[in-house]
Image (cartoon, rainbow, N blue to C red):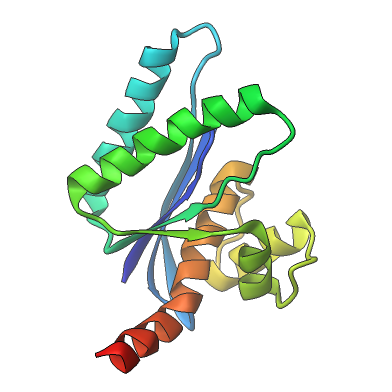
Length: 165
């Protein structure tokens, strides 16, 4: 199963693609999209939409795993990130790829075994799970962690679908 993980943001948006299952996942691609603060908002959103659409067409993932955004303290940041989040969801809907949301604690628990893990522990587990040694941009590492989290949750989601049938 190919999964696209997305760490949403406006200035920096992480994208990470993995293939396989949680026991044997393979790293396909990762990138951190950066938009310039000098760009007008429509241009920033267009760039994000175009790049996400391009990756969806190129890799044809079966699922997208995106981080749930809970930004309560800074309304202006939440609004800007929310716009990027919406553009990403639009690209996924246009491609017909289902979106699954995971919170930061779910990602930490799936990869490290505890919801209180720190960022370095998560990055270590991403590298170990994918068998890569290179250093990742934090946003791309978060995106890969989201994709791996979806792979970890996939067997449970499949069992739940069978139980409902």
